[in-house]
Image (cartoon, rainbow, N blue to C red):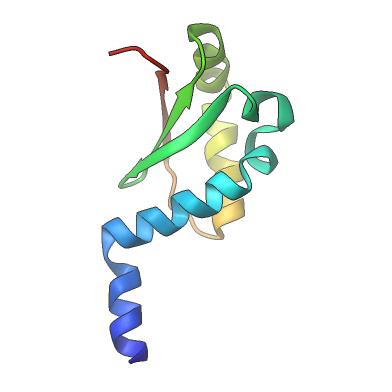
Length: 93
């Protein structure tokens, strides 16, 4: 049974979903309370953490802090899962 669970967790969709959930729960620890009110992690695509910002101005702030966000996200996750942070603006297509 443990082998099956280990294999499931190692699969990319489940693994990235677990990582994303962990980041979402501790997002304020990663980016601070103020920024956490304006952006959210919404997807992991391999080593890329996608963040959704409430406006273009907040997206610029996240991009400026991208290296620090990645570093802190990895601290929360206990792995080097995040190499890049990409930001999208809510409602933008």
